[in-house]
Picture 1 (cartoon, one colour):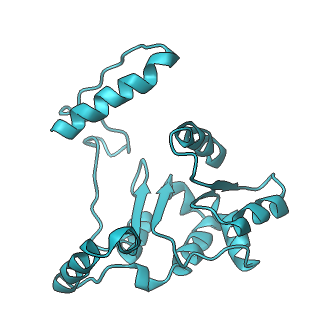
Picture 2 (picture 1 turned 60 degrees about the vertical axis):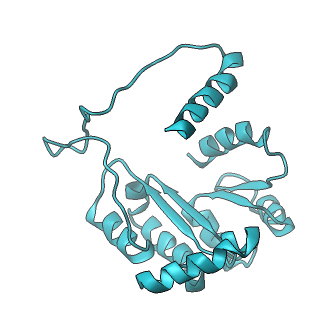
Amino acid sequence: MANQIDGEIKKFKALIPQIRTVVLVGGHEAEKQAFIVRTGVELIVATPGRLCDALAKQHTVLHQCNYVILDETDAMMESPMDDYLYRILNSIPSSNLKSEDEEEALKQELELQGGGLEAYRKYRITQMYTATLSSKAERLARTYCRCPAIIRIGDDEFGLGVAKNKNIEQRVKLISEAEKKRELEIIFNCLLLL
């Protein structure tokens, strides 16, 4: 999956080539991956085990980590990956998290507004994606996410973890590869107007 995500990132890198990325996965030469990380990157796509390995060998640190996205969280909550996940999240300083006190969090937000881009990136945003929400994944969210919000797409009326929301309309539009970028721009511009 990490390689698949990297393939999608490469499509967007054409629009923002200055972003340096690396994929940390098993099956590839660890030293080559470590060299790329040490030269500095803005985005790491990794499997939990390989990222823990990079942290243990001090190839990287996560002191400036501002965005954490966990895809297929339920799958990562299986042993031994859950231990790796906790080690990774614990290696990000708690100073990267907003206060849990609402007044203090508002004060932090106001301080950031006048501080430019560096201040804007001070606090971590954690996003978790999963098809099913196990109790383990829910505990993880409550531990590492400030005021977590659960967004469900669908009503699981049969308890099978698969649902279709009657309020969501899905449309398929077949277009050529050359038309994709323009079509995305149209969709994004329409969303901005909402």
